[in-house]
Image (tube, rainbow, N blue to C red; front, side):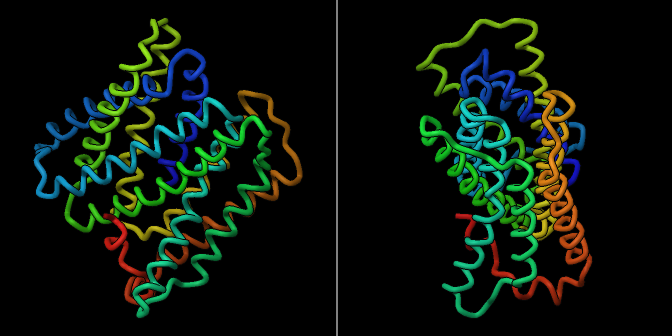
Amino acid sequence: MVGSSLLFSLMGVCVKLASASYSTGEIVFYRGTIGALVMAVHTWQLGGTLKTRVPLMHLTRSVTGVSALCLWFYSIGQLPIATAVTLNYTSSLWMALFLIGSSLVIGTQRVPMRLIATVLIGFVGVALILRPTVDADQFRPALIGLLSGMLSATAYLQVSGLGRAGEPGHRVVFYFSLGSVVAGALSTSTLGWHAHTWHGIALLVAVGVLATAAQLLMTRAYTVGRPLVNASLQYLGIAFSYGWGVLLFDDRITGLAIGGMLLIVVAGLLATRMRSQPRATADSTLPNPDSLST
């Protein structure tokens, strides 16, 4: 999950730069094309197959995940990258709310409060680092960014469901990438394609390679781990993004930002500690995320 967060932060920088030359649909299309090709070759090298026994689960996950991706890429292009990343990372809070709501409906299971507290601590750190502000003319893209976070939470739970169904990570990433190709092509066919430059090609390739590697690592994390624990560790991506801002865009380091980074580290350590506990004591209180994967 740490490696995935690092690569996703780099991808966000490349998406922000590429959005000056390409539409959201184009970026999604090329990101999906590269991902599908890489995963097809990777599957062949593993001697595996792309055939699946649960095509409907892949379709549902692809629709949700690609929708979240398109909305997030759009918000990155329209908002300051710090604000867009913050809104997308509300996925962890949405995930906690989904699990709480599920437990209330079921009535027989509960979510551990200390795990929810870990997620909330991480989000406080996010707010301190990025301190996002939304102007009046940015309200619409801000809502879109917030919606991307909600859909991302649903997609992560669907990935967990696919893992429980026995689907390997490379297959999950392949069908997600294929969905990105279809969605990107449909979107761009109505808006038109932009001409390429070497700079633009480099950015698109970087987005595709970084996203595919990060997606594969994230899929592995969510198929073997617990959703809220992964959500806590995922906050490290915000610290990475802030670091790139300092290195590449001369962002100013403030006392609040340092405090936020410390909170993120604390949340990650707490999540790691809970992850190492026996599943019999830690998992028994969590509602089954498979019930949310549809």
